[in-house]
Length: 413
View 1: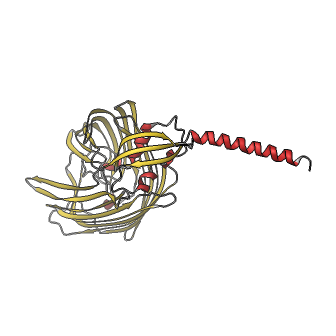
View 2: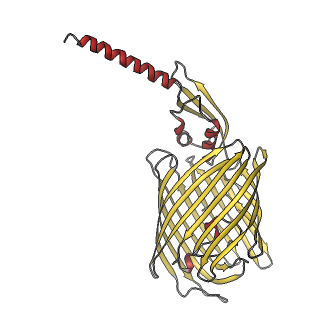
């Protein structure tokens, strides 16, 4: 019992020293986030994208990393980032000033030629209800038919709460499957219905798991001039689990991404044999010097038993040298390019991308094909409108001698 007062004294000294150590440690950390400039976006949604900076060393905080996190929201533009010491040595406040982008966007579509007409549009809200959700609805009339679509995607904005999405598409049109020169190799009319529901869950700041459930139906219609049309209609249920990794960095001019998505698709045929598909999409962008970066992307799909209705277009391979109407069961595409910042103004940043591309494909009619070629684009990254990018350019398939103009919109449904 004689040693108790000394033990208590020693414990108090140790606890006091520990408290001082922690206080000194906390004094150098980011302990609070302040966001100004929000109008429509809810505060907790913006904070969700910046919460990873809580507990970081203030002295070594990379402001470009903070700006990259703001830009990753897709709906906010960073105006300023600064640190402010809290009174009493209680850490630092990370103060971020942002500007909201225009999120409600009408996207008109019109195209006319001597033998075809396309007219319509889609209304997109990329910040629905101020939650950073995406809502889209629209339709298109074409000489060959028409279609309508609707989509809602809820993105996670709180820890341990999953994201979800649902959507639907109905189309009545003439489907054209072509070769590398945009020449018809298959043609038929059909009604198509797609309905989907999906869930996603953030496993970490960079890793997300997701699963989607789909119903798809293709109904053949009478056609005056069919070419190698399928013999029967098709109905199927689909299950698609996936893992996605995403990170990004900002060099003061361009936002560089490192993304990869691995997905498995199981299509259970209701009136035809079931089949599977395995796919990998990878994008690697690396700033070599500020405003000049390497752009590497690859898309791989392996689905050897996919039926005609479920063959995919070249967007699955992440290449531009094949017509949009090209169709195949399996792809392996690679695009290697360099992108240079050209000019920045109040509405966005203009850049030039040149790339060389190669793609292997395997389809039910053409069999195995290997194509290569070059592509060049002017890209506009918008700072006022909540779309990732607009692009216009040319692609030349050296293997087939086919040239095509490409207009790209950095959003998908």
